[in-house]
Length: 279
Ligand code: KIV
Image: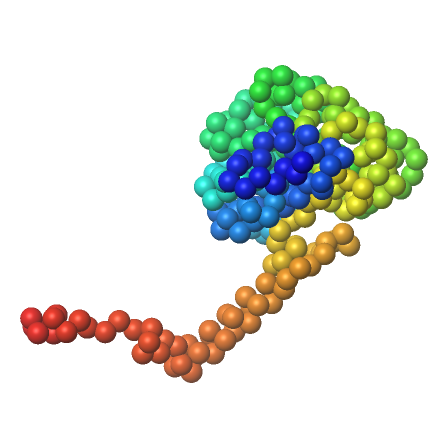
């Protein structure tokens, strides 16, 4: 059975049950407008902390705050009715202790009304994932390339190239699965490793730069539509060139304004006759 059920919310349980079934379609959304456009076509919308780079022009995700995630999470919830909405926990909001993670994740759940939260990390976060899930907060895990650890992990590179790193990432995936995560993002790993993780763990894997064998796929929407072109990773497939279209539209508008072609009479309000008579 597909989890595509129009007019009904897709829950984390539906996503979890999709292990080994129809591919789970996921995209990022940060705004109401995007959420509205994507809702009918996706199973899961992630309010990712990638918004720090995509919307706020930050160099990485480390400067993103809980307040930013809550504000964007609320915006996405206002215009999505079907997709399962998950909000990323930003750097510093969950690593300190399971208790701190619970406090901040509970705030996100209450204020946003989303279906769950995502956090990065493997074995070192397993205790926190178990703490949250046992207390009613569904967790989407995230293993492999961890953007919030960019300073300690040696930058944005593919992971699992050597046996030692591959075994460590597989152990991370097993740990988050056993800890109770309902699914796990697998980011930026070599294909055979992502395939092996998918075959090994009992929760769905959502791949990004991972493998077609993953149970689902996710991309940053602005990458997919050609709106964010600061850096296009190898694993992105562009389905539109909206950035170029916006730049072209702005250029045409500026030429029209400068040449007096805009606004035309059709864009101006005329006086109502009755108003004229009264005067
Ligand atoms: O922040 C984000 O958008 C993410 C996805 C790319 C998985 O973590």
